[in-house]
Image (cartoon, rainbow, N blue to C red; front, side, top):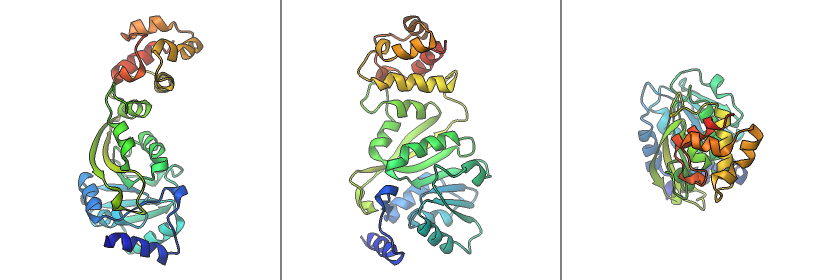
Length: 277
């Protein structure tokens, strides 16, 4: 693929090699880049935050369409390269930094911003939870992640992929797996397949969660001992809160003999409220 050779040459010209610590697998498939931007519905009125632009495969598409584009790149050499490339474009701003450390709410002042990016696999889930926190300002994310993680995000109860990440993300988002991406679309090619997900965050939780911290604790405890029944997985948490677990399950309409993966979002919410004490 010519684009892969170009990516290799661009890195060599910058004196760089892909860094495993930063999860650098550079997108080098123009067709995939175009499809991501199309999925994100980017147009002249769009404000976009691109996470990890790297060599700019997505950035060129975005810069040509978006009304305003913010780039956050952890690699200082690549960030400087991007800043130089778009120095004459007042609609593009490049920030060198870790997206998990950058104050996104201060960086991006416009409302209704769409996050787009090829997320590093090793920190994709933390980034998604960071976007979850910033969802009032960034209500949509169209991002490429490991296919296994994508399948977890869209999983349904009573399936192997359904777990903590599924419930906590779906509590405040509608998630769609937009399309899958071959490892051949990257340089260097990763060992896993990828997928693009379209995440539309909701300003308020999709069900009544009660205390959100308490809800997260219940979900994590329930799945922490996945093979155990709820009466065993949640026993310690209920005791710490001074709550009768059997009674809480009865009030939530959840069988204490059930396992975490069988509960849908509404059932988890009822159970978490019943266990608040």
